[in-house]
Image 1 (cartoon, rainbow, N blue to C red):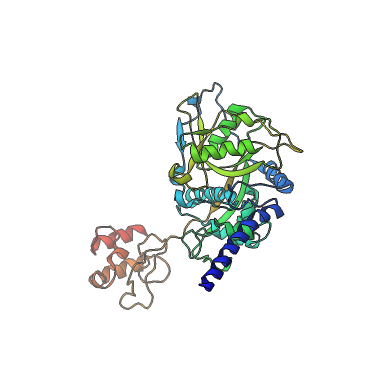
Image 2: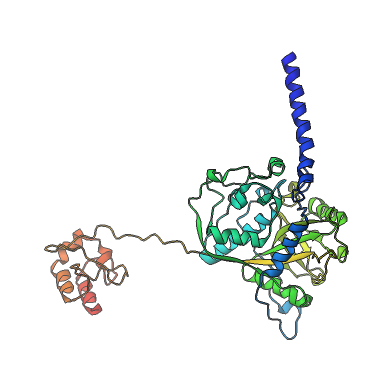
Length: 427
């Protein structure tokens, strides 16, 4: 009985220690999301400056060309979405307690680049990035936030992307322990990097939305989505009211509710309560000209099942020049894309089985022009009249001992004199 009492007291003490440690972790480092609270990023001044500066320094993406007379119906489809192309399990697309929203959004960009540049539809590992970025631990680990520039620079150095299905590559950093200890919970050494996809190049681009007017800003964003490039959107919430408004919409609004940051335009940035969050713009809908919206893919699960696709809508008719006054301007949204290309998968050749030297020959026939037909019958490295003679003289033999497809020059599925004639005509 005494042992049970001691164990109970130890368990209670451990629970109390964890409860006390969680807010202390956040207080000790302004980057750290408060354990047990929402996963939005609370960035210190240095991180905020990086958030804005990396965006401003990025090369601009090509601007869309607006028609001389513009209506919403002249700028492309009424609605369009890349959502079905994103390798996504909504219930598992959940960053949990960690501030890895930017990794999830960046990975979505990379997955679509893999699809459109190499034709490969594969879910990529967020955990592999977390475990390798900045050594997977410390104040700069992935769970304390980052930018699309950080994401692109990492992949530009590593040049591989690891599938989610690899050993230990599925996401585990959503646990509050990762926030408290500021580390990835899966050691990088335990994540298998085979197989992997090989990157040729990767960089980020800034979608120009400021100083160009609303029509051009919207057209520039839509042009990227229409090209098959989802847009990385860095959202900022200037104060607690904005944070509460967004979270209320996410957890209580349902997927048809629309997030509109307009009421907070011009609000001064509150360093104590302001927050940031990265999401992925995967589409748009302008079927109702009075209420057009962007389709945003979040990384906060399904909101208890009320958002089965893991998405929310964001108003399209915004003031894209709006800002939140601070020591430097902060913006409601920063729109960026990832310019990435993967190597094409190496095709597995279909071997022609059993090609062997003809009677009296020591060399194996070859296919000089790699078209699947073996014009070089005697194997001397070239197609010439001697090959025609050999094919004719040994017609009965190769009909039995060679794969027909290798010498079926008339493509009728059998060995006959017409094959000899067709080989002669090829010389």
